[in-house]
Image (cartoon, rainbow, N blue to C red; front, side, top):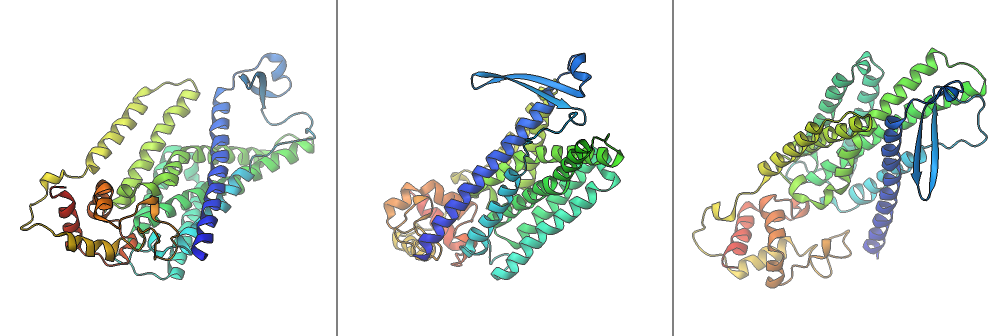
Amino acid sequence: MEAYLTEWLALLVRWIHVIAGVAWIGASFYFIWLDNHLREPPEWKKQKGIKGDLWAIHGGGFYEIAKYRYGPERMPEELHWFKWEAYSTLLSGMALLFVVYYLGSPGYLVDPAKADLTTGTAMAIGLGGIALVLALYEALIRSPLANNGRLFGLVFFLVLVLADWTYFQWFSGRGAFIHVGATIGTVMVANVFLGIIPSQKALVATVRANREPDARVKRLADLAKLRSTHNNYLTLPILFIMISNHYPSLYGHAHGWAILAAIGFITAFARHYFNLRHRGIRKPSILVASALMALALIWVLAPAPASDAPAASAPVSDSTVRSIVQTHCLGCHARHPSQPGFQAPPAGIVLEQPAQWLSHKAQILQAAVATQYMPLGNLTGMTEQERQQLGQWLNQTH
């Protein structure tokens, strides 16, 4: 019953996290698009303090949107804020981190081949890493480096790559990926909480007091715009991480940290194309370069053909493979799993009979032989010889 309830809890928390994330990132995309599509207003609007306006049609009606240079003459009675989407994403994401990784199946987070960590130690490393990167980011954005956008981007990218590599030294591939995502997400929400919302509150207070924005308010507004831009470039990498747990060939790779760094760079670079395009600057070469880098990464990661593998001296018997599967696979991939934390076999894959092994041949070869990500965290101690025997049996005349 405990596993059943835990599975439902993980599902509900994940669902809330996805809903909140879609709302937040959708709002981010919309406002970046809106800001870059504002056009110079007519003179009568400029006299009212309007900096730019935009006309749009959606849902069967016309919308007129105006952005004030600093604020309206009088504060409206009802003002909509965009902050709870971000806060809900972080809170649900942290809840998911605890339910699935810290308190769930240890194989998701810990890989004994790397480090035989206790739950408490793993939590300390994970949460400590998130806090450290956040502190570094806040120090950087409050420094003169923030005035140089490209250099700041390069330095912070290197910080994330270092965190990425460090997580991979301690955690399983899947655990490392999710902690990079949690780190990026925390920085993004901190941008909202520590920079964007305080700037907006200062601006609202200035308008209510019927004052002109002073140097402090203008500086806060500039930093809020910078933080918002940083969040915009981080959206595509974090969306990739949100779906990456479905693809063990990436996080289970021996150089998974480098793969994640490469994909993060490629997706952020591709986002740059759309940001420029929204401003009327068309540089398709950016998108072409992103596509070529992605294709190059796919080519580099392609597994060697089975025929290239050295031939074994003797065939592997069915009984040998049955013993391997029973020892290392059936704890999770049985109709009624015995592994704590599993109410049903992952992805619905049952491996109780030889016919089932063969029907999932491609997945087994990828997860247990090529990437060696399965068993989770290698909790059962599957040896290299057993992996080779399993791969040989699947490839021999089957």
